[in-house]
Amino acid sequence: MNSVPHEDNSVLPPASSSDAASSPVASPAGPKRMKPAISGWLRDLLVSLAVSAFFIIFLYQPVKVEGTSMMPTLADQERVFINKFVYKLEPIEPGDVVVFRYPRDTAKSYIKRVVAVAGDRVQIEDGVVFVNGHRMREPYVPDAYEDVRSYPATVVPAHCYFVLGDHRNLSNDSRDFGPVDESFIYGKAVFGYWPVAKLGKLR
Image (cartoon, rainbow, N blue to C red; front, side, top):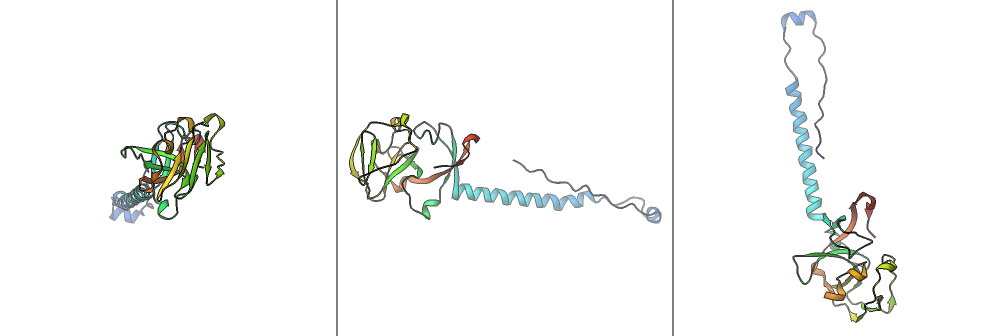
């Protein structure tokens, strides 16, 4: 939203009669007072734009979700912010919702949830996910969205991640295109901002 510059509507004290006789016309002070106000407003605007550009380019990027493979966590047309810098400071972990370039067409981007990392042994039996022999707790997958597909036991390769959509019976994910190389992952979905009813941190 554009800011409106604040006008200082101050007044000058009335002139005495002697002053009025010697100086019948007062010098206009308005334009001179406006110049510092305008320059200050422009400076603040430029700083705000620079800070916003820094955050968008280097830290956060707004993205629109297309499709239903991450429901109910993320719905079609929902807007979220992704953090593009976080994985330079911390590792990708199971449970993270990540955005990555689709391995079969890098012009496209997908958003999925990480369920296993490099070195993990992942297996799916009739839709139930096991990682290193332990059944995963997945409260983000409602009963209505569960799937019955199986996936053979596989060790996730180095520098790769096994990703799944929360809407298991509608998701094209690592069960179809295999583990995703970390070089394709470019952000972590961290905050939903539209619709307002779902405003907040993603889990």
